[in-house]
Length: 210
Image (cartoon, rainbow, N blue to C red; front, side, top):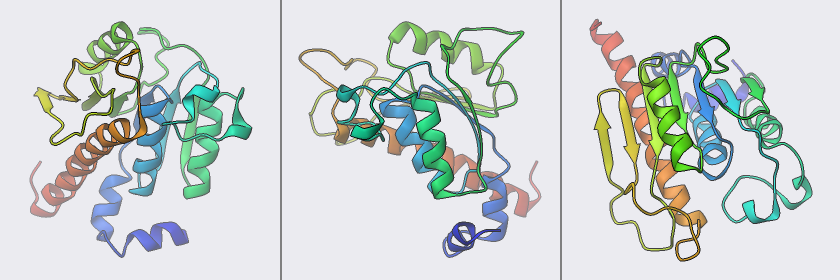
């Protein structure tokens, strides 16, 4: 156990941290949702990640994504993996710098029990969620989070093992551009759900509930 993980034991019991670290997170998309989610979850103690995104960092990403000006032109997933290892050097992070497609034979996120949907395009988001609904324990999706209107309460819809955070209407566009406050608020709620599910597993383990 490294010093970062010892620091987490200020807030978690050993059993809770162990429960968190049993999860393998698969994150589709390394932009506003994905980069922020990966970093928040790493800071919560999760240490097994698989990331997939074909995109490279652009100046227009920097208003809400966890990258820096000197990284423009670099692959998002590789920069994000380096960031995670700076938080916790014992993190296991597999990256796929390519476009995600629904491929049953060569699924890059196979074995991930919690899937985070963090893509931009509505069609890809829907296809991704449908693909993993029967392949993962939980699927957490962010949908409808653009603009600058204050977020009093971000709605969360649960459909079985799928959690969708956001109003599912406010897509990024000319009148509702993606800004850091609402994007980060949505990501924070997504990560709260993942952390809560993980800590409930620890509680069930302690109570002997299967």
